[in-house]
Length: 170
Image (cartoon, rainbow, N blue to C red):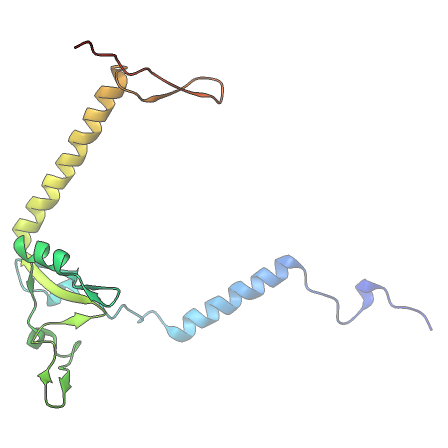
């Protein structure tokens, strides 16, 4: 009885390249089955936002504990809860027996509360933050280029050397 060579066998193993193609084909099939209509339950299209308002999910709970500090900070700068009646198709009322609507008219999902704020204020804050970032980067670059401070210096070797801090006489 002659032995079959590995290349002659019917049940020869797949190569790595063909296996990876098989996995990719499987992933593609799964994506096609699920379709492109999968969206986050937190997503609300911009055309459903009121004119002149910006939406944001604000954390009100972290690790099953109320995050009062974050909630207080956000409400202080003008974020207010969105009324649930505006988006009943996405977030239906939750009525508990004997308690009524436990969300008090707010849209709450997984420790987050949907809030809104005037778009002009949001853009103003965003521009202010961008300007602060530019200013900080320029300040750091000026400080490094001047050669002052205790910044690491990298020369051709792998050793890192530090400048000495100036000694002040009293």
